[in-house]
Image (cartoon, rainbow over all chains, first blue to last red; front, side, top):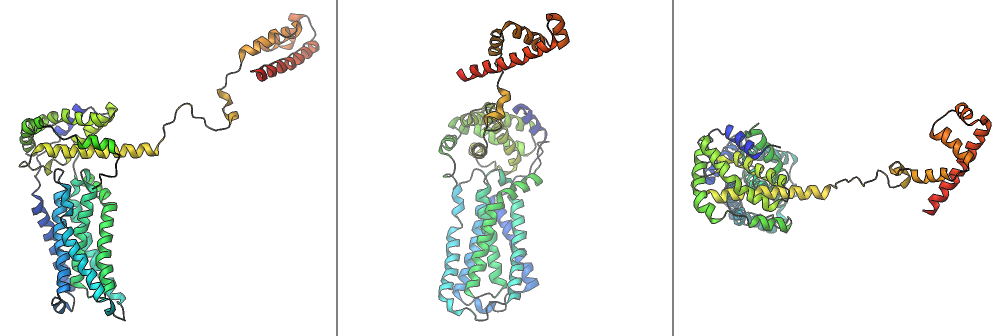
Length: 223
Length: 209
């Protein structure tokens, strides 16, 4: 077993200057800017949904979009804040009001528009394109967040994974509403909440091990 | 958030383990400056910092681990973590709570890991037998030499002499015949009878004990 004084010697030996992390809100801003770029690229490649101009007239749709957007922003800020060891765990509740608004909007829309489910249902082609958008949004954003928060693996992996997963899920749901006209209420529910639940669950299941993997591959340790 | 999941005893100890006022007021401010200089690559400051915080981490770890080696492992784990996340320290914030949070987090993680391991694993002792059946462990029983010696003493003189020569002294039949002046068939018969008697006497002995 290494003796502690020997370990200190080894650590001092490998102590190179490090760049301090910026404040959490700035780092969250960087991540959100990256999310905006991803969404912008998809918008250029795919274009917004055909009935977007009509839909923005509907308060419920706008409210749902704003809810998802606010959830993503607040969850991003909370996850960067939570990743610091000395910050309060209460930061985890920051995105909850926006999340409540978002879920309530979808739920309310579901109740009022239940009968308006299109008898033709959703065509397979559109569903597959939806799935592609889901992957194109969530994968790069998840990777970016894992890289930016890798040091949290040793500190609060579970909380950071869940809140970070919520941020990714909310951006993804926002993107889906922006690009795809799946307005059948069941589909909205499945896509929005299903995606959110899936990403947040994956985050909580694999976030710890993924963060640890990132930390071990991108952090220098004394040999 | 996850406070309800682990056992209350270590948590109570750990949650009470925040740096005391002397650390925050005196050493804490110095540590903060040392850490800021360490982030800039000042190795002297970094050594002073690590050597300064080690006794504090050791006192925390000693409260949570019974074995000194476990406590030492925990201390080294905390030091490594500090090293890996040192870029995440903001010098405008106090160092004491930052250090305490990291130390508590790593110690709780280790305690949880130990608890999980102990729940899964059972330590083997030498008393553990390979098989439950008694006959499979016969090799561990010592032969009762005293009983055998007593049984031989109780044999008739000619049988006792035959057993001593042929079995204990490992003489051949020819040698024994020459030494005793008896014929080889007589010795064979005497051996046969002696072993039969011994078997009966030892059986009686083991039945009585």
